[in-house]
Length: 190
Image (cartoon, rainbow, N blue to C red; front, side):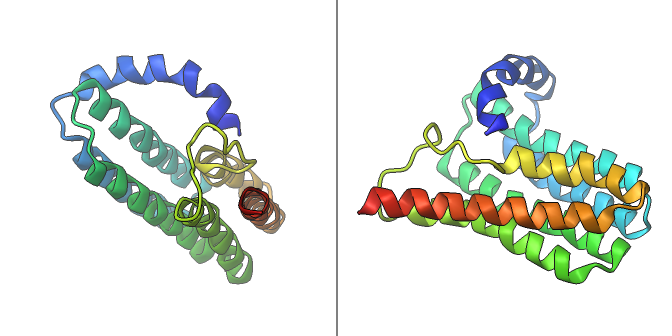
């Protein structure tokens, strides 16, 4: 929801930044986000919340950068879009795994991961049944919002002793969004 509203404001900035990375293949940038997610997970596991959060922000930034570079250099492709979507799931899973290692709150982490995976799946599966575009799916916890919670909000919560509360909030918001998408599909298919 927030991501969709601010995309038109962030795209000019990302185009400017992308100019510095035009020599890199967009798919390489996509894959690099996994490496930063792994590094972030390592620091989360060590309970170094801010180092983990900083590296998670870089992983999220690379996720935005790959598409900007692809569009700027006219190297967009269906394979690149597919790879980006799959790597996005890996990045979220890796970050949440690191949080689980650092907190030991595996039930909440597992439920948060389930919600994070269901959100894009609900939309992708809907595309098999009805027309789907990115404009009219402004849901509460899209990818950008989930990454903000994981990379920025969670490190502060954990640092101040509220890791479990933050994870519970993630679980509630992620599953609410998955249900929001399911209801949208239900009403479209009726």
